[in-house]
Length: 625
Image (cartoon, rainbow, N blue to C red):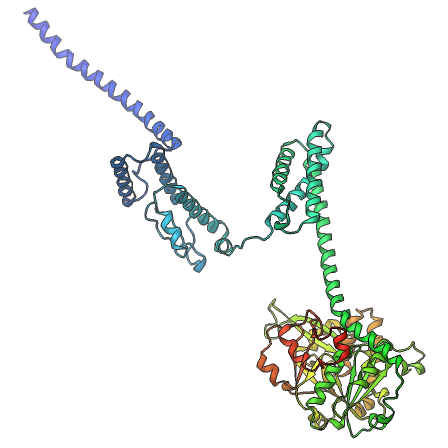
């Protein structure tokens, strides 16, 4: 019995021990798994292992499994490519999940969520179709990798800098002479590092290398401005300079010294840029104002010929020059050809050329050449008088120095748009204004009551006799007005506030002057007082004429109709050719005069047709070429 009892007791105690051991093993297993799972997850994330559970969409998992099936069937892709596919897809999913949510209502600048076929990456709907197609492909050749990296960079570009960043990238043009510009940049950096490197004795070799490269670059850039002119071995010089700069950057130099040198170079560069800008403006102005060789030749040839001849041209025409019943035109000019074209075009379109009288005022340098030219060339039945303004001695009673000829002044005035006073947009208006010489007209032509003043940069395409019959209602100066530019825009140039701000500016070119009313209002004395007042305020001398002329004729301007004169042929390339044909007068105001090489070609024919191509002096001086 004892044996039976003992055996029964033993059989009952064994299952309880086993249950206790099973619980212990289960607890230990759970503890081990609780430690292992996070460790496996972290190791898997760090190593790039990817599981689709919890990431992406069902479509992504199907796509990935289908690609794996193709891989197993064809045995064409190696394990490296497969790993790249998993890694890239995983990273795409992470970027998609971590992409910041953009606020709603951003309009055209917002990112349009167009889910990619393979990775669900948000893309712009307006990107080129080629980019979308290639970015969704899992064929990871070189082209596919480039396209995907391009898509990701575009997305980051837009998120960080806005859609302008993408537009700038799409509109980017190939830089001309990029190698030369790259060389200049490297030279700039090398010059900044060289002083600091040269101070360190242990870097003598690098200092010598930098100095040699700097000298080589300076020599090449002094002889070359375009990529096509660079020497054949230039690529080697670039590599050597880049290597030397890399060594210099790796050296422990004082950053403050490099920073100071950079600032010095920037200052020098700005000074050089300002110098070249001023030089360019000066040379352009010099090219405009300097007489071309052909015109200089013409003036010299005529002057020499004048002193070889003996004649009295104007004696028989003296009565016509002072007859107030005729049509008197006044031209201030130093240019023989320009004044000849003005007279020729006016006479050709005049109905009664015998009534036309032209008074040409010039200086001593051009007086004799003009006398001979207008003696040799006849303009219908019109009479031409050439006067040397320096011989008139009009200022003797004021005890002032002899008068010098001054031509109409041209101004470029920039001001805010009238229709949008609060706008930052500016408008530029070109004005041609009377000079100091014009205010001597009543004294020079004391026997005349009315004259028409013509600039020497115009051509006439219609009979001007109608100007003499205009009723100007007591006004003094009949001129073209520019109401887009008013005195309120020129307040900074005017000496006082005693003027009507809404008065329109006017321009010269064709001006009919009532000399009798000019004398009544004492406009010459008023102009001289304004000039003295402005000069005492130490204003810019070039604006003196503009300010004084506008104030002198304030309230005394008679506005001519718009079809009398069309301006802008010396600076505006976009003139309507039909409008050019219908205008009574064409004004070549601006820098690009028709007798200069830089004149606008499509307008030159309007001017050149009034030259005589058979004239011997013109042919000898190559004026007609």
